[in-house]
Amino acid sequence: MIDGRIVLQKPGAKNDTLKTISSTGVYRKNVKPATYQVTVIAPGYEPATATVTVKENAVEKDFYLRATGAKPAAAEVTPPPVEPTPKEAPAEELKAEVGAKVELKNILFETGKADLLPESIEGLTQVVEWLKANPTVEIRLEGHTDAIGDSKANMKLSIDRVTTVKQYLVDNGIEASRIETQGFGDTKPLVNSTNDQQRRQNRRVELIVTKK
Image (tube, rainbow, N blue to C red; front, side, top):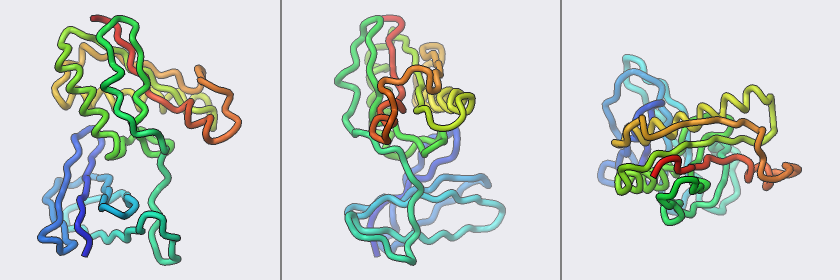
């Protein structure tokens, strides 16, 4: 069996991490009826994510992990696409000066959705710690998408994403009054998006200091 961890996420709530029971490969957790995003993470394997709906009865879900770099087999379950992005932590770049701006490069979402991926937690935790260390600072979170798809849908997606980020910060002890949010959709691209790498640059969440 593979020893790893499972991240359980319910929209609008904190992530809940489960550990395996004596490396048996079996995980158990009592949860309330709802729809959860479940991500399995194990060293040497690619993460696998699935959506699980819990009703009144118990739910069992098997995950098939693929070793990093291995070619997919026909019987394997392919994880949903995610938006790859550099994993540099943003905290070192943050400055408590009005107008200071930093791109939160390691804030990850499911493609086309406002659901945070577990890989985002480290960066978000650093933002929480920085805001707690600078208790008078107020910020604005600005969301941007690429130009693929309907512009109105992109605008809503950018707003939903920064709202999700704000909610995470609030859930972890930051006053809501210190955080503004604004979505720009695809109206402020960094580059002309002619390929996927350029489109990836345009998909971003930026943090701007509005009050010192």
